[in-house]
Image 1 (cartoon, helix red, strand yellow):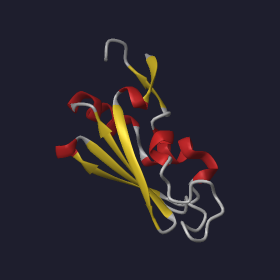
Image 2 (tube, rainbow, N blue to C red):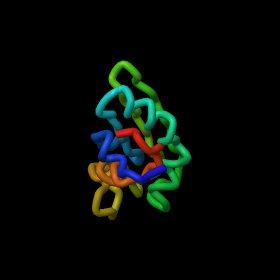
Image 3 (tube, rainbow, N blue to C red):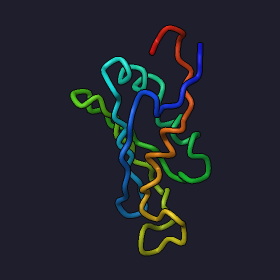
Image 4 (tube, rainbow, N blue to C red):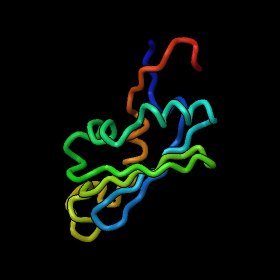
Length: 109
């Protein structure tokens, strides 16, 4: 097994809706999508974000786009107009998710 950063096999977009952030994780190809579908679970995402995500993490699959969409509930400190956080709209959450380390089998690029 070897470790990689998620950014090596995917890219992301993120934003907000109220007090929840939305992260779209788009795999580089079908092989990468199958890996992230297996390894990037709602539990793993919540753990990765630590105390930032206080609510549930919901995952939606869009296999025709090689994409997973995550809703991070209660992650913005009240949302854009209420929050005192530096990123009240969740714009950096996609980039933060791409820093997640994955253990993948040797020989998989």
